[in-house]
Image (cartoon, rainbow, N blue to C red; front, side):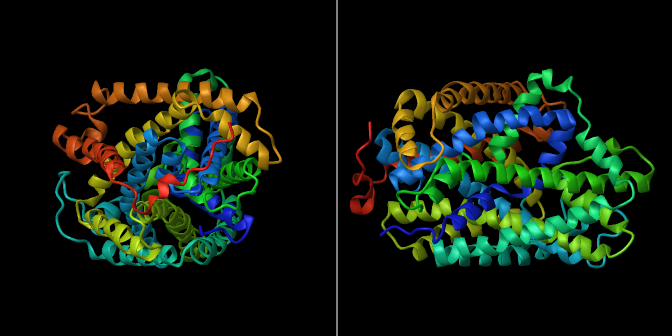
Amino acid sequence: MREQWGTRAGFIMAAVGSAVGLGNIWRFPATAYENGGGAFFIPYLFALLTAGIPLLIMEFTIGQKYRGSAPLSFSRMNKKVEWIGWWAVFISFVISTYYSVIIAWAISYSIFSLNQSWGADTEAFLFGEYLQLPDAPGQIGTMVPSVLIPLVIVWAVALGVLFKGVKKGIEMANRIFIPTLIVIFLIIVVRAVTLPGAAQGLQAFFEPNFDAITSGEVWVAAYGQIFFSLSIAFAIMITYSSYLPKKADITNNAFITGFGNSSFELLAGIGVFAALGFMAAQSGVGVEEVVAGGVGLAFVVFPQIISEFPALSGLFGFLFFASLVLAGLSSLISISETYVKAVAEKFNISRQKSVTTAGGLAALVSLIYATDGGLYFLDAADYFINQFGVALVGLIEVVTIAWLIRKLGVLQNHANGISDIRLGMWWKVCLGVITPLVLGYMMFDLFKQNLLREFDTPTGNYEGYSDAFINYGGWAVAAFALAAGIIFTLIRWKGGKAETKEADNS
């Protein structure tokens, strides 16, 4: 008998927990600011309704109807497309190996924040003293104990939760992580908006530049943000929805998950820009001078903000980095569940054995990123696996289902049969026309930029990396996910699981 969620709320918390990750906190605020401020919410909302939620509905329906991990569900839908499921699974495998390391950094920084161990120069501390980064990328070097120790803790928690299963492990963990994360972040936001200069930061964040939304790049940025923040094409939502009861509502759950994720992104934007406004006021500069995103925002700019705090700076810092840990763990668990379940089903082994082998292998690979040259490998792998992995598999997934094997009608009938909100022609138009066009344009632009070397760097490559490092640290990583997916497709299913396909309700 297939594992199931204990409650509908448990599934929604797990789905929201997967979607709400580090990118919500450090990617969305900067993306919105750089693409029209308050005006960015127009293309963002349009992207959510025409791509984000329709894709969530599609993946929820696939998992709930075909009752399997991504590879098994794709195989049951059409044996010729099983490889798409495995491709997505191996993309998640790669992401889990470096995502876990960033959570380990956040654990270290939650402790550093108690007495501001980073000193006056937070950038030098991060790259020099903490990560011990060498000058040249491509050197694996030696282990960094201050990264390795929290990394072991991260994997112990994540694999321990997965070992316990769906109801007693994943659901129980998210019932703790997500409410705690929301409470902590609300405390952070309330404190941030009461700081001197907070109004200046919020004005910079929300002030609309309506001229920006006439730019195609801004609309692509909105679709990209929605796509990458909702855990679409990671094999996650298909796997999670396969644990739903057979009559569970699909469309309602997708809307709740989509809007829940966006609500947290908005909350993160308010907290981050209120804090950036405070920092700008303390430094006597404009907000535009202190805006940052990604690793720089979390581990360079925020430590600077925490050091300037008027009172209880250690507590504020601890809560901020604790929120990163919780958001990261809920996402890491979901990412890892994709390959744990897929391997268990493919080889007909127990969950515990799959966690030990597949999860253990991911933990071992992650040690590369805990070396003193790990950040360079992490940066290259993250860029290439997301741009030429997640985005590309998303495009191929939707085109295959909508146009090649033509399953949108089957999925629509299934979802309408068990959901309160019925799907009409808008859903097919979104998935059959709008999403492929936008994702197709994104991929065309990315390939053009990378193959023609249009980056404004000395080498013309991403971040100015050498050709050799780009090839083995970036392109090879993205190619590995596809190659491994094809290889695993060629392996026969043990126990005949792929043969127990439901009849389509055509």
